[in-house]
Image (cartoon, rainbow, N blue to C red; front, side, top):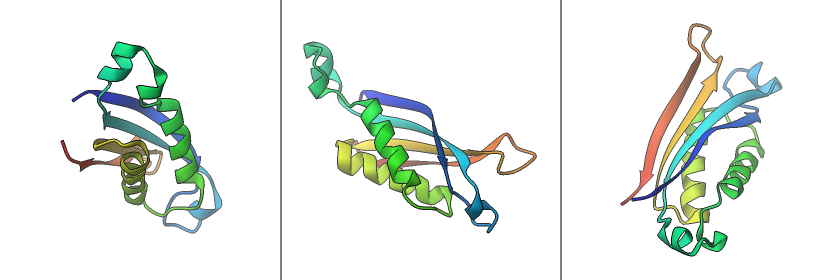
Length: 117
C-alpha cells in the first residue's frame, strides 16, 4: 500500500495532567504514515485525487488545539480517528512526541496503528 507521510507536525497546545501544564502552551510533534492509494492522483497528475497533506495538517492542528487535553495517548487516538473518518485513510500510524516532558529525555511519546489493510 502507498503511504502519504507527515513528519514532525509541530502543534503548540495546552497538554498535560499537572495544574502548571494547564496554564501554558507546549509543543507536540506528530508523525503520520497514512495508507492511501496514490495511483489515480499520480497517473492523472490531478490534485482532486490526492490526499492533501496541508489540509490534513491544518485539520489536525485545529483538532488538537480546540480544547486542552491531558494525555498524549488521547491526542494519538483522536488524530487516528479523524484521519480515517474525515479523509478516508484505511490505516494510519500516529506518533505523538512531547519534547522536554522529562528533563533527562529529549522527548517522550506514544505510537499507535489503527485501521486495516
